[in-house]
Amino acid sequence: MLSILRSANAASRTGLDFRQQDAALADARRWVGVAAAAATASSGSGAAACSSLPPSCCNLPLLREVVLASLPALAALRSATARLAAALCRDALLLPQPPQQQQQQRLLDADAAAVISALLALSAGNDRFLAHDADVALAAACAGGGVSAPRATAALLSAIGAGRNPAVRAKAAMHLDGLLTRGAAVSLPAPAPAASAAALSSSSSSSVDPRLFAAAAALCADTTAGARAHGRRLLFWLAASSGAGWPPLLAAVQPEALRARAAETLAWAAQQRESAMAAPPALASLMAELEAVQQQQQQQQQQQWWGGMGGPALDSVLTTTTTTRGE
Image (cartoon, rainbow, N blue to C red; front, side):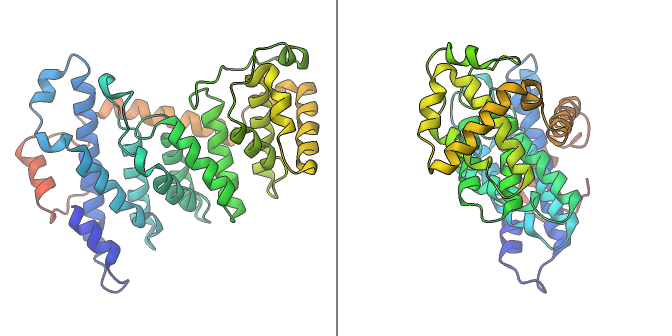
C-alpha cells in the first residue's frame, strides 16, 4: 500500500496506474476504519473484541506514513482520486484517541502544517465538490482528533500569514473561526453572547495570544469579503474572551491604519452583538455535516464498510499491495 502510493507520487502522468493508486487509497481508508474500531474498543467495554484484531491495524506510525504519502493525491487530475485522498485525510483526522493518550502527541501533530496546507489548496480550488470534501476534512482537523487544536491553530495562522492566494486565506479564516469560537483551541473561556463593552472592560486579564488578535485584525482589512467577515467575528470573540486585556492587544496592532480599522470593528461589534457572534451559514452547515459524519462513523465502526476485514484478510491488505477492492 505504502509503496504503491509512493510510486504513484513519483510516476509521470503517462506512467501512472490510477486504478492501483485508487485501490491503495481505498485500502488505507479501511485500515483507518479498523484502527478507529480498535481505539474505541480498547477504551471501552469492547477490549475483548479489540484483542481479536491483528496487531498490524494498530501500527499508527506506519499509518501516518500512509496518510502523508496520500497528500500528493489531493492534487491529482482525476477528481475520483482526489476525493479518495480527501476522505482518507478526513478519516485519519477523526481517528479517536485513547483516553490515556489524549495528552500525548496526536497522530498527525508533527505534520499538521503539511496536511492542512494541502487540504487548504484543494479547498480553495474551482471544483466545488472537491472543495467541499476538503472543507469537511479541514473541519475534522479542527475537531481535535488526529491533530491537536494548538497545532491546527498554528497551521491555520501560518496559512493566513503566508497565503498569497486570497481564496486560501478566506478558507483558513473560516476554519480558524470555527476552531476558536468552539473554545477548543487554547482553553479560552467562552464569551457571553450578550457581552457589552462595560462587561469586557471589567473582566479578568487577557488570556489571548497576541498573534491571534493581530491575525484577526489583519483579516478585517483583507481583500476578500469572506475573510473580512470571519475576521470581524474572530476579533470580537477574542476581545470578549480576553476580558479587560483587549486594549493592550489592540494597541499592539501595527500599522496604525490597521489598528484604527480593528477599533472600528470592535465598536461596531459592541453595538451589533448578535450579528457579530452569529455563525455564518457556510460554517454552521459545515459543522453540522461534520457531526453527522462522526455519528455515521461511530455506527459503522465494526460492522459496515470494513466488516469482515479482521484477521488474515486485514493482514493481506497491509502486506500485499495488489488488491483492487472497491469501497
